[in-house]
Length: 325
Image 1 (cartoon, rainbow, N blue to C red):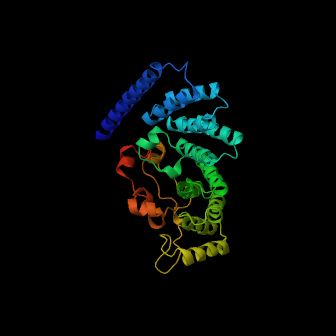
Image 2 (cartoon, rainbow, N blue to C red):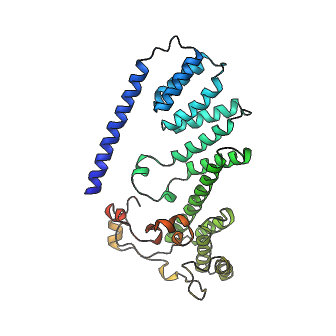
Image 3 (tube, rainbow, N blue to C red):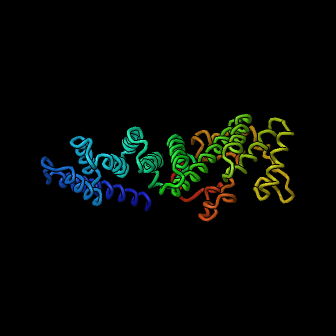
């Protein structure tokens, strides 16, 4: 009840705050007569808008500046700042389009790396909406479309401009994105185990091992391969995966103290109870095959003590019947 009350209050405050900011933005625009503005006047006013966080007003003035002075001294800089203003305003699609336009028109501009960076940030932020930021959820289970585009953009930035001012942050974000995308493959493999599609699960595990090396999901990729090949009675391939797992990740939860793989064949082919069917899988969940060793190999989850990574329900998961976590 406390959570619902807090959520309601936050929503009201945010709605009121947004309305107030919008009103201030509109008043700020209405008080100005820009009809006689020179290019420099426009640019100075725009800087004030950006400093004050009046994103929509800044966007309108930047568009007006470009329309009235398309070849002026501030035209190219205004196009860059239009990308930033649209990004800060939360209009990520428009920011991405503006970044693409800038790169197309000014591929040799000394600050074109900034356009790539803002494009990557826009894709990065696009993947998490308002409720994803407010409500705790597993980001590795979100739609990977924007994450892939963000990763591609940041990689392009790093390949083209490795010494860019924005390269260090871009590298950190690529690591984060690769980790999440690799973990998404493991989630998919666990789902295929649930459906009895062992070949599909093995392919997902192999894809992680081959394409997401150096990510914390690789140990689970090997465990998925070992289990899936075993269930398909392809013992040689299963043994090869186990050998790699033992040699490189001996602390994996799927291995016992002697290095033997703990197969989970007894959970294969389970039958759902009537309670599980009636509640659409929210209650009486059967034990199924699955691997998630984030609490062992991922420093982020180690430090956070993430209960979800250990397969335990958090308080929020219990409160919302598993709808969000």
